[in-house]
Length: 189
Image (cartoon, rainbow, N blue to C red; front, top):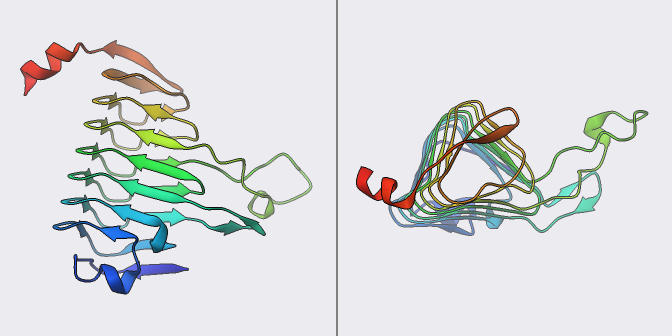
């Protein structure tokens, strides 16, 4: 089930069928979601226009039990795309730029006789984005990635593996370019 949404407020969450839409959260116009009952959005979350939360319960006959969660006080830029077949969690106070992709699975491509879109999904692998993290414009976060708290993901980074708290990562594939110390972060606030 997919829904094209013009704008969503706290009151409208019941018509969308979202698992949760926290108080003071807003989803901007032209937003598309699938399986809204499997989406849980915290308080004071902002999701900009042209975003798509693709939370899939079945693909090519295979069933999934996906859960997509966004913590409180997150701000997500336009053109955000999520592909969730298992479990994706975005922590609290996460800032995500425009045109970011986060996925816990992808269409398999191992059988060259079959069109990729007709092949089953790869085995889903959960994605977790830690509290206070920043994700730069055009970044991709792929299956199995766990980012610690207060990480920085550079613009255009393709994140294929996990990184600990306070990592600054960039590139394709993403690698640590700097490790911040906790006291450096506290002084900056």
